[in-house]
Image 1 (cartoon, one colour):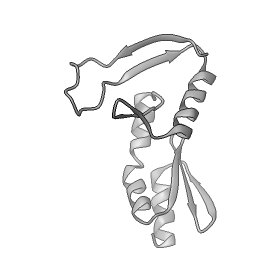
Image 2 (cartoon, one colour; image 1 turned 90 degrees about the horizontal axis):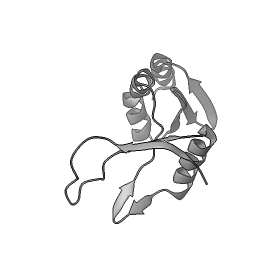
Image 3 (cartoon, helix red, strand yellow; image 1 turned 90 degrees about the vertical axis):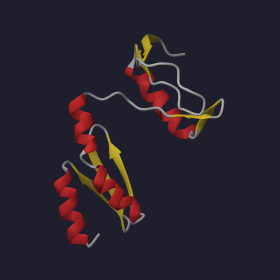
Length: 119
C-alpha cells in the first residue's frame, strides 16, 4: 500500500454532469509508489469511474511542461502518418520508424530528421 503525504483538488466548483471530475494532485511519500501507480494506470487503461474516464499524469515543473509541449505539432504529424512515438521523461521524443528507434532531445532535431525521411 502506498502512503500519500498530501492531496488536494485544483480550485474550482463542482463539475456539472457530463463534465470530467476536477484534477487531484497527490504527493506520495515514495517516488517508486508514483511510478507504480502510473505504470498500473497505463496497463489498466482505460479506467472509468461512474461513467467518467480517469487519466493519470505525473506533475512536471513548468519548464518541463513547456519542453514537452514544444513537441505537440511533431506528435500530431507522426500520429497522422501512423508512426509510433512516445514522449519519454522528462522531455525526450522516441520515434520508431521502419523498425528503427530514434531519440530526439530537441524538437528541431526531430523536425530535421522528419524532413530528411520525407515525413
